[in-house]
Amino acid sequence: MSRPFRVTFVHPCIGKRPGARYLRTWQMEPLPVAVLAGLTPKGVERRFYDDRLEAIPFDEPTDLVAISTEVYTARRAYQIASAYRRRGVPVVLGGFHATLLPEEAMRFGESVVAGEAEDLWAQVVDDYRAGTPGKLYQAGQPSDLTRAVPDRSIYAHKHYLPIGLVEAGRGCPFTCEFCAIQSFHRGGYRRRPVEAVVAELKEVRDKSRLIFFVDDNIVGDPKTSRELLEALIPLKLRWVSQGSINAALDPDLLDLLRRSGCEGLLIGFESMDARNLQQMNKRVNLAQADFERAMTNLRNAKLRVYGTFVFGYDQDTPASFEASYDFAVRHGLYLCGFNHLLPMPGTPLYARFEAEGRLRFDRWWLDPEYRYNTLAFHPKGMRAEDLEAACMDIRRRFYGLRSTLRRAMHPVNRQDWTFFQAFFALNLLHRVEVVQRHALPLGDPLDRMPLLEAVR
Image (cartoon, rainbow, N blue to C red; front, side):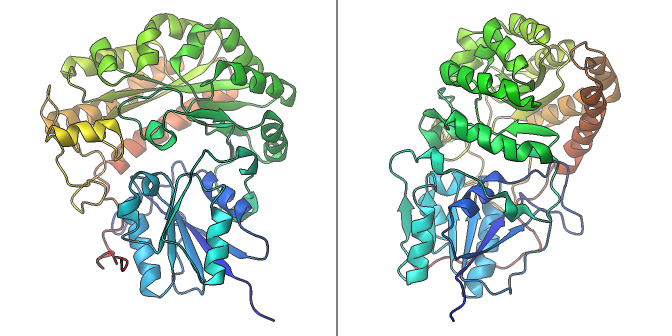
């Protein structure tokens, strides 16, 4: 009797410091791996290794390796792919980065899946089993999301955080210049069938203290959002997600969010300067630019906010940091990300900076000299070094003791004992991570073997 075909899934980490443990602050289940596991044809033996948690057994026999890539993990993904390919094991690369740069990904793998995998993955496996693999598997129309059913048994014994990750929809209707999501989904947005989401939640909720809807914009389509939220009410869940600011100016939608079990939203404010919002094509923030009223409505709905700001657009100066910091502390943001602008490949921003000659690296995600938090472009309003330092300073201040205590006393943060306790733990973890992630190398610097390029 012949042995079954063996597929190994690998989730790469961002990077590692020599002699140091990997940062384990936010190690949640990598949902795409479970989706691929669920799409794998029956009779195939599946294994999964998480590069953030464990050493990868490169010498373990396998017939095919599948690696999902993001921009930040691309260098490490190619290192892992090279290690397997030196041993004669073929590698398939997919995910956001491979989709945005398929020509690059094809240099480091036998095959590339560009786009969503639901309509392609079974064919990839069957082609390899038959010995007739293709080089590029290109998704055509948006895939059938009824097939995106995760098989979470692949996570066995991994000890992830007790947060259940569930996907209710994909994409975002807004086309911000810097956002790779709009490039991947081409500005489209669609929802999984509500009954499928509810069925999955019933399986996940008993093992998870909190549900995290990984949607890029849970309120991207108000009509279908309401249908989903109504269906969530009987489940009595506690959940968080990401959403655009237009939801904060719709009292009925806010009420429905709260009744459905929503405890908080990540909202991208991005900038306090309308000129920057205009340049980044953040249309929803320009159209709904009353941030103060939005925060009042969110507070009245008892919803916590994880805010994000981005610095580096042409109107930013040192004063931009103070305005954002004051807003975040004054409104008691539960958490906040103060990020410098990062030109992601495949985005309009990257194309613009490239045309303007403002990129500081040729493919920063592969450059061995690039470090986490390094500015990858030449800003106009500030020196690159000053912008980097200002971002670090505002993070340290926001997660410092004075700011943390002040925000903890905000009514929305102390209304629930569980989330009040979690507030201190999460803010402390962020404070530690701000330092630990700074200047982190991308990939493993101890892996000094050259990346192995595929024969074209």
